[in-house]
Structures are given as C-alpha cells and as structure tokens.
Length: 512
Ligand code: FUL
Image (cartoon, rainbow, N blue to C red; front, side, top):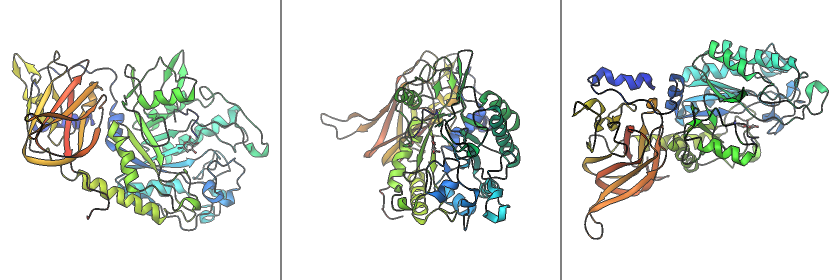
C-alpha cells in the first residue's frame, strides 16, 4: 500500500564534447522550463538501481512489522552483502538502496538514537552492522549506495512527540556521516497510525507535512552530502510545495505514466484523492516549475520482503524487461527490489532472474545499428546564415549521449533523415533529449522508408510519443530499413535531441 506517499551530466558530459569538437559559434538555445541540477543529471544517468528490503519482517513473515518485534528475531545465518550486490551488478543495476529502517523501527546499524537496533540482536553477537557491510560491498563492486529511513516508526516510545523527531534526525545524521557517499535517501510516505510505541500500543496521528521536519532534514542533507538525491520528503510552506529531487512514479508496478514529464509544480499540491494524486505523480506536470523526475518502484516478488511462499513467484527476465521499457523507456529511473532471505542472501530464483535480465540488456544494447549513419537535417542552428556544425544532426549518433542536434529558435518541428550504411533489421528505437536544456519536445515520430509500400515506396510511421526526456524506448515489430526519418511533431521551442539508437532485442531464451 502506498498512501500517496509521494513515495524524485551531465553538465560534465554535455561539456565533454568541447574536448573533441570546435566551440559553438551560434549562441546556445535558452533552457526551456525547469532544468536538472548536476546532482539530478548524475542520477538520470544511473537509470536503474536495486532496492533491498531486509529487517525483522524477513524473520516474522510480515510486510509491515508493528514495532513489537524483539531484537532477537533478527538473526541472519549467513548474511552475504557481496552475493546481493553482485546479483544487482549482473542485472545492470547501478546502485543499491537498503531499508536501514522500515516502519517497524528496527535499525540495521548500531544507532545511538534507539536501543531497538542491531546491537541488541544475536547477529554477530551484537557487533554487526548491516548498513556498513552493504555500503562496503557496494564500494567494492562499484555500485552507488543509498538508504531508506522510514519516517513512520511503530516502535519508538516518543513517536508523535518531539523526542522521536530528534531521534529520527539523529538517525539520518548518523547515516549521512558514517557510511561514505549516499546517492539517494528514500523517505517513505506511509503513515498508518497504530503501533507498539515502547509497549504503550494505540494510535498516534501526525501531520506528515510538518511533523518530521523535512525542511531541516533537507538542509542537513545538502550540508553533509550535497550530491545526495532527496527522494520525496516533500513539504509545503507559505502555500508553496517543496518537492524533493525525485518523486514516486505513482504505482508500485515499476511503470510510470505516458507521457511522463520531469516537472512538478510548486503551486500545485497533490490532490486529496489518492487516485488523482497517483496520476499526477505518474505523468508529472508539463507546465511545472521544478525538475522533479519520476522513479518507478517494483519488487521482483509480489511482496517487498522475502517470504518463503513467494520463492516460486519471482518475476521473469521477460517481465523485468517489460517494466524497464515502461519506466526507463519513458525517461524515469527504476528501483527494483530484491529481498534477501533468512540467511541474508538472495534466493537462487531471484539470482537466476536478475542474471537473465542483465544478460538480456547487455545483448540488446551491445550494438547500435544506427552508428555510422549519415544524418541530414532540415535545419541546424545557425549563425550569420551558416549552419553551426557544433549543433549538427551527427550529434544524435556520436558516443556522447548529451551532445545535441539543435535547430534555430524559430524552427520547432524539424526533421532529420538518417541513411544507414546498409539495410539493418531492428526492433527497438532509442531517443534522448539534451535534458540540461530542459524537457522541450511535446511530440516526436519515427518513420522508415518502406520500399515495398503499396502504391510505391513511401515513409511509414513506426513509432511516436509525446514526451522524451532522458530516454525514450520504443519496442516495435522487427523492421528492416536503410533509411529512417525522425520528426519533431510538436515543440514550444527549438528541440535539442541528443541520441538516436537502433537495436535488435533478441528473443528470450534464444541462444547466447
Ligand atoms: C511503501 C511501504 O509501505 C512498503 O512497505 C515498501 O517499503 C514500499 C517501497 O513503500 O510505502
């Protein structure tokens, strides 16, 4: 359940084209609408990362603990952070976010903020620290590390009063200062009321907007870890919405809306109606004034925590690929949950599925069939009447994903024709916008030159979309062509498109 929890560079890479190409002659286009920060651009480049739900629930067979669990129940017999992180890596996930604390309040690190933590458990005779082991394993394997710290705490005796808020801020400070770089901090929006509350039981009501002190928390994060993405933890002040750096994608199925706009609006709070709020989060706001991109969340199983009964119900690589296309392929990031079992390792079925998924992604994107094509644009940004090669259509095909083909300011719906060296067969198309200049286009289409069309050779539309953003992927029927046309059909300003790719996605189960 997600009570509309509002469960959201490469300047550098965009600039890296300056190293190999001439300086632009034409003045650059003005950015359109809100633009990502450097921190957000780095985050967009990750595209997908793991979620790891692990706590007392793993041992009690629950999804939500009520806070009454004894510390002694947490006792993984063979915890292996390396096994978990390597499975994430093989699945092409670029980072990992661990539930350092879920709603039950049990802390997986030896915090000073509450006795309800791992030091009171039998794990490593109370000397264990799962957060440290995971952070270290991520570092070893080259994955970024992040934490989920539930604001709602069903154990803490002072929940609902100022004592808990102080403890909660201490928890966040400890995590930000003790474990190296944190790439994303996840603030869940769930607030169910009832809890154990130090043995007192009952219900406590808080105001999510004011109680947790998200404003102060954000200041602390910015000070201690300026590169950390603040996921949700939104608040209002003086009638303004302060969204985090990224937002919940509006469902727990991993997909996001289509179109998916990267913006949210500081003047528009989420509607009180849960469905309407979810829709707003999944589509974003075309006219929004804050860059706050969507993150789709989903578990590889039906539950977020490991349950023996779900060992046979792990999502297949095919299903994971579908989710990838409806999340990353719509310009959002994907967080894929993979819960360890009571040993503290991923079950073999989860590992097999993650391995199959990673293999499939590598094979799909191994060769860009558009590489080496000749690109001819109807318009290229110009200076004194001459097209500036810095903004030429070849930018769609170079290795730099954020160098862009840009038109003159007055040209909003240009076309580019791509002549491939030979006829190629493909079934997946990729397009990216140069998002450091904002999310600009509102309609694009791709055509292939169809030699066999009835009535003579003609263009045939094979893909279209309204939003593009960081990445748009279209899975299309297998198509063979030597010439393609990319059309911008609607845009309020000159488009800035940075990458065009053609790929052949293999069939599942086909030989490696
Ligand atoms: C929800 C939580 O209540 C679930 O337990 C889970 O952590 C999911 C990712 O977010 O809001």
